[in-house]
Image (tube, rainbow, N blue to C red):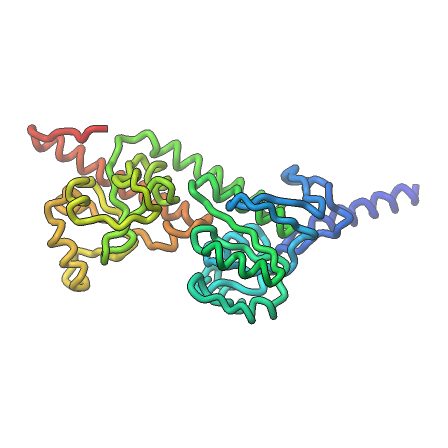
Length: 338
């Protein structure tokens, strides 16, 4: 009887040890490889393992990453969300979320990496944003003997995939899986509520001098789609095309979603007022359908993009409500084509 009690206590101790290994981004012992995380059923990787990144490159991981450097603010956020924040030894400049990221050493930005500092930090993994780092920079890092893994979220559904990938690389699959599932459930609710609503044509303004927007391969275009909108420059060949004023007037969107603060107030900057005067003929300007969403909530490929998505959906719903009022009060009102 005593022996059975001792065996039970030992089993409970081992179970608690395995659970605590995943908390806070800590790595589990190598001997636990191949076990399934009890809460999620996610199997842990067996090293060495070759994984394919979002550049289509095969990256050999000889062990769980213990010292990670993020080369983009959005990746910094994802690493924390995947439960691996404690493994970060360096982050890209402007990594301002969560607050803990602000105290991690700065290794430069997309325009200027501090290679000497990166090497001195002795990382065993660098996570890069595919759209933010040139191929030459990645090759330069690899020539220094460093392991680089690139990521990219083209759609909202890609964010939980990246969380799971980071969890696998960092040995925090349990935490990553929980965050990914919470995100997926929230995204499904948003999509169910808005994606089939009457269409609203949208111009996404990411900069106003010159006019810059996004095509359908950008995450923001998927945000617009989920909210029941259509991106008026979806078919542009460039990911972030510069468009002419003439093209914008021809597109005549129902709404403008801006990452630049375009407020129709006396305190608005002169260039903002000039923008509004220049495009006063647009339906979006005439009907006051100009909305602002903070760039961190719509341009970063992180879990916070759902906050931005909810804002966009609410804003497009306002456009639909105004249409309904116009339809009731104006007998000559014409419903926009789907």
